[in-house]
Length: 89
Image (cartoon, rainbow, N blue to C red; front, top):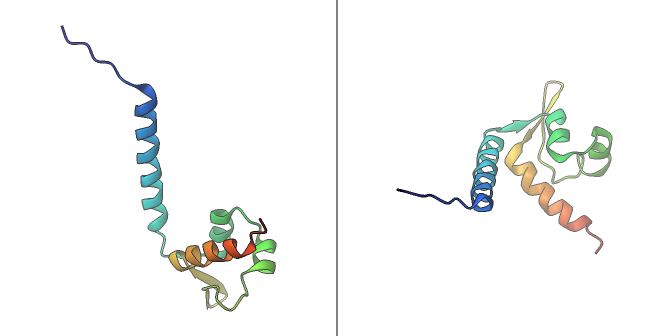
């Protein structure tokens, strides 16, 4: 007779890790964000984004016609650095 024991916590941890990797892969598939997607990805309102960092010289954005396109990877890198500078620990 064969008996198998499974550590549920370990299985859940492994599943969470795989899900996080899959989410990151999906997120990296976007080349550009529009302003609406930028709001969704950052959990920030349009007004807050426009007032705090959107028009800073280093923020990567391109106006094509009437639409702003934001390179996803560059924006992510900019925002991580920007956030570190905002910290007032």
